[in-house]
Image 1 (spheres, rainbow, N blue to C red):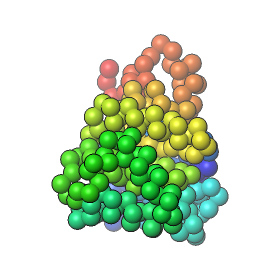
Image 2: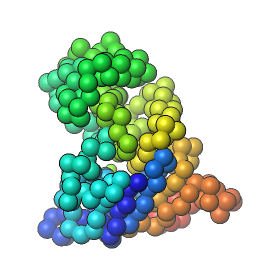
Image 3: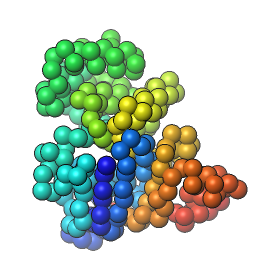
Length: 242
Ligand SMILES: Nc1ncnc2c1ncn2[C@@H]1O[C@H](COP(=O)(O)OP(=O)(O)O)[C@@H](O)[C@H]1O
Ligand SMILES: [Mg+2]
């Protein structure tokens, strides 16, 4: 379970409040969609809750482990796919996956098995011997995804994961996210693409201007908003126009 309480993060010496007193609970085994318009504070929240960015106030607990007090222990639970695909360009795909496996202590037999499985799933096996700097955007996204789940983290966090994926890869990723949850792990992903969230999530939260404006199960949302699509609802709570 993730417990975020009163998370506040500013940039530019306090001039920009990107995340404002945000509290959120994510239960184990669920697939959680973190939604919001561009600039709402999704990436900042994610980078704060995984220990990449320092934050001014609040606490983050990952399966009971306090991120500030025990950062290494908390981070072991997490696999993270960033939104910008910035990874080690000079490495080949296979070198990168071996590096990530080594960081998280995945033994040789297990990493080989997982690299074969995910390489085949994302149609990337033949490209693993090439340097990442020669990959397309979608291929980078796929190698980041593989590197983030090579150690089977209990918590898989993805920032705008569908961006740049072709339809087949997006379909395969959604299936993988679903299967991942069904095996007892937790998936937390951000998106501004609402139909992905609508189809995939058990729970959704909507953030706008750094503040949480909605936190509900998908079932409750569908019941309450039966007359509106998620898109209309999203626009109504984030100050958009329909
Ligand atoms: N490194 C940064 N320095 C200053 N402001 C930033 C920085 N990164 C993000 N911001 C600002 O913080 C706010 C939230 O950004 P972000 O978390 O990237 O939103 P989202 O991921 O929801 O699009 C925006 O106003 C953005 O301009
Ligand atoms: Mg973002």
